[in-house]
Length: 151
Image 1 (cartoon, rainbow, N blue to C red):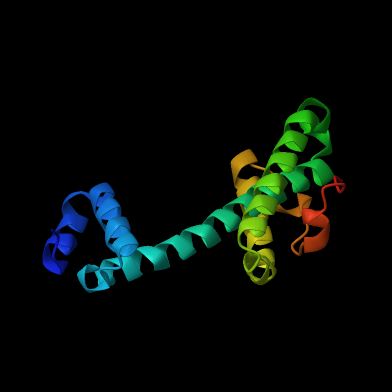
Image 2: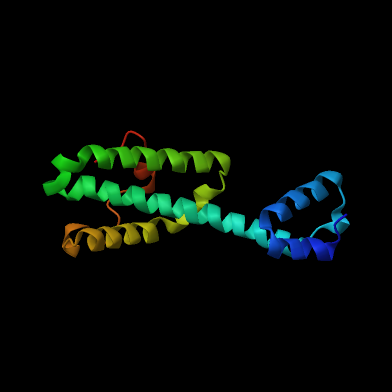
């Protein structure tokens, strides 16, 4: 039988086993045995990870939309791959929003920052001139998420 102290120790020694033990404690309703501090930390971390994943996917999506719209010299050779990435990133964002609709407000909050990251990353990755891409987002969030929108 686990105690609160041994469960907390287990967290540091074998994370997966800690998860399994915590699940059993919850299923059995033995809430007094829960390692509450680490459980709070993990739940908080899960929320941060969901937000981070969404932001990362939005940045990648925006990078490829920018390339499709503004990098005309490379478009003919790379158009197909860029489009594939746009479709995949949109699908993953849509899945995330279906699982957690409250993340939609996160997208609204981070859209401009993600655009700036996408713009800067694309400039640095491909050593492009900064004037190639607009400073402010040329797309609205609803366009970026629209499965029929590809510039």
